[in-house]
Image (cartoon, rainbow, N blue to C red; front, side):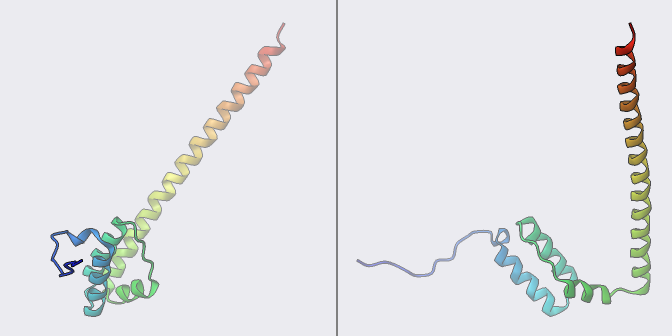
Amino acid sequence: MNVDVSIQPNNRDHRDEPTYWFAVLEIARERGDFEGAVKAKRQLLRLGVRISDVTDTLSVLRHLTLAEVEQRLADVDAERAALSLLRRSLAARERVRRRSEQRATLSTKGALRLP
């Protein structure tokens, strides 16, 4: 029985395989290509692979300029302020809902007592 085991190139798109993006990620890290590394991480996330590398994140942050850090802090502060407003609004809505339920309960109990 003869089996042809010659290597045949396939025409598959390897961009839907995690191993492809791991290779891209490692090459980008070696070259200091932080944008390429971020792209590779996004693609891995798309494929269901989560990577959490604190040292990699810190090395990316070290390359930021003071202006970029200030801008990121401003963005974080703005998002925090928006979330704080949303939290207050949701808390107020919840208080109103509870009061309405309490009033409905009291009026139902009061209606039952009447002759």
